[in-house]
Amino acid sequence: MALAPPGLRSRAQSAPDGAPAHVAIIMDGNGRWAKSRGLPRSLGHRAGVAALKRTVEAAPDFGIGRMTVFGFSTENWRRPAGEVSELMRLMKNYVQSDLARLEKAGVRVRIIGSREGLTPDILSIIEHAETHTAGNDRFHLQVAFNYGARPDIVNAAQRFAARVKAGLAEPEDLTEDSFQSYLSTADSPAPDLIIRTSGEQRLSNFMLWEAAYAEFVFQDVLWPDYGRELLKAAVEEFRTRERRYGGADVNDALAAG
Ligand code: FPP
Image 1 (cartoon, rainbow, N blue to C red):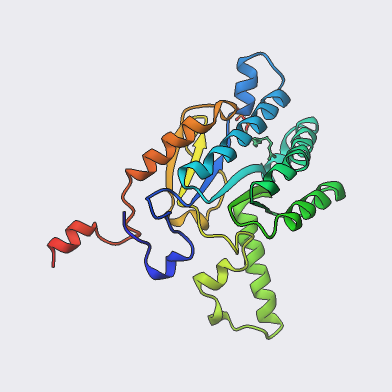
Image 2 (spheres, rainbow, N blue to C red):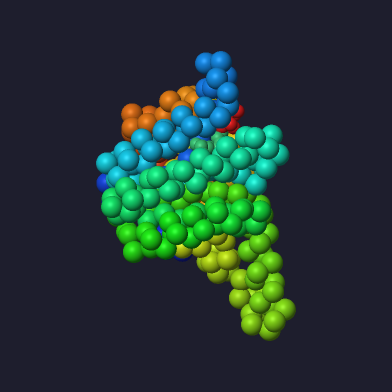
């Protein structure tokens, strides 16, 4: 498997044994899972949280050091109010009820996305989780919550423009690396593998900038049915991929002298 060129290494790097160091997941299909059982959508989301717990617990066993999950998108505000509040409640419960366990397991929790529109109780839970786990380094869990990649990119551009306006930067100072530092994923390497469940094959405004060199695995299973075995299958599929980062196949390059 090819190594990323120097400029990309800090942003995308597989674990030494060929495992994806950073896996991002679009957890899709909670609603369909519930519908197929004649259950309300809220129960699909609850089962989705259980799947999330199983998946996070299994991840380190496959050499994964970081996971980003898409918990709530900026577009999800368009869902019925009851469903939005259920997703907010689940987020709160997940962080609150699992925090002690995550903390003990050496997990660092980060919430990426906009803080705008979130209620004070959610904001304080987020802050509490981030500060209490800030010293952990065994596994990084990033929850994309109230996240949309385009708003994140626009926000980054606005923040850089404000620095230029204030005379603190010149337009030429903007490079790929410096732009990255304005995104809400600033401190994170890029995902090596992006998984989407439920058979849909779209990015849906998730990590557009960060996905530049990611591998994609689409699994035709509804998110509440996800767990260790399906994550293992995705990692195995990733290991079969050859990543060239725009360069030539290593063997072809050697043959060309
Ligand atoms: C997609 O299912 C899933 C979501 C809207 C977000 C994922 C949410 C969870 C796993 C539960 C909450 C967990 C956290 C951490 C907030 P869908 O409703 O779009 O499913 P459908 O496409 O079948 O309708």
